[in-house]
Amino acid sequence: MNDFCRRFEMDIAVVLAPMGGGPSTPELTAAVSNAGGLGSLAAAYSGPEKITQDITKIRALTKRPFAVNLFSPAAQEPLRGDVEAVSKFLGNFHQRLGLPAPQLPSSAIEDFDKQVDAICASKPLCVSFTFGLLPPEAMQRFKEVGIFIIGTATTVDEARQLERAGVDAIVAQGGEAGAHRGTFAVPAEQALIGTVALVPQVVDAVRVPVIASGGIMDGRGIMAALALGASAVQMGTAFLAAKEAGTSPAYREALLKAHEDQTTVTRAFSGRMARGIQNEFITTWNESGLTNLSYPWQNAFTQQMRRAASAAKESGLLSLWAGQGVGLIREGSAADLMERWREEIKATRQSLL
Image (cartoon, rainbow, N blue to C red; front, side, top):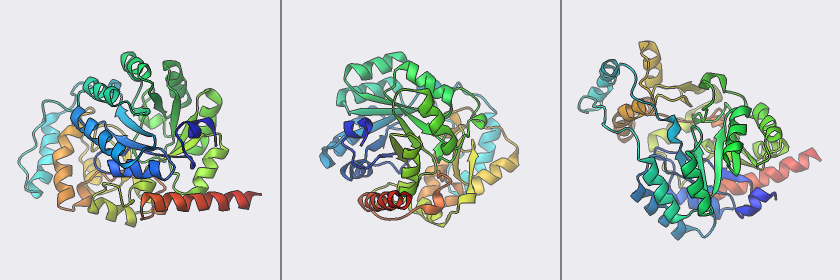
């Protein structure tokens, strides 16, 4: 095992991707760590009290290291766009779900500084982040309490910026990856570089460990990423059907039916480019010709619809985030999945001798 894996007591080079909006749970985080990987808790949508509660719960379930994930506040933009037009568009779906007319909230996202306060007080061994660089003050605070810091890059230049900013490792997020793009230095459309192309270029450009992300679903993918120079892989879609994941029933059903050619990148749900399964909402949004509100306002505006759609099992109105490897998704406990990947890694290694 390499230094990164040894640091976090990993016997399989798998980092759980932090999957916000429901799939991330303390149980899944702990299960991945207990199975020999590095679990991650998605905390970007959580207030300080919930962050503290979730970390406490994870520690009750595992004695092993885990990470906590945040969004960089650098991605937050002032409100831009035609609120009235987007409200009218959403109103049709609200009516269908029995909801009142859409109301744009006064605040679109949790207070980042309070999130940092909660994390520093709880002192997990690792913090990861995406959507840009962290404020220098936050970086300093994490380092002062001994927290290992992982940033997210979608280009070589972004990786270099993260290294200069002081991160301890970098997730190289390929264009195949599900959910939100971590791009921050160029338009997201220019940063859909495939994992196989991106990882070795990032490895050659920086001195810190690189974690490969995007389209990796099994032991073959893990071995391929390690061969490209990665110290570990980050897997999200592969865990969405895990027993411990908080993935809703409608979301799970859509995932298990999906094929590799059914994902798309869209700003329809959040205002930020993300990859998910093409569905009714994305198609209707694209046909409308509307321009999304800026992030995180579009995300806040569609939240009530998405929550109601989940309860009503209306997968056509959900943000079904998934990567291009979705056709390889499997059900089972996190421990079962990890053990299967161990066997696949062995088999792949043997086949290459």
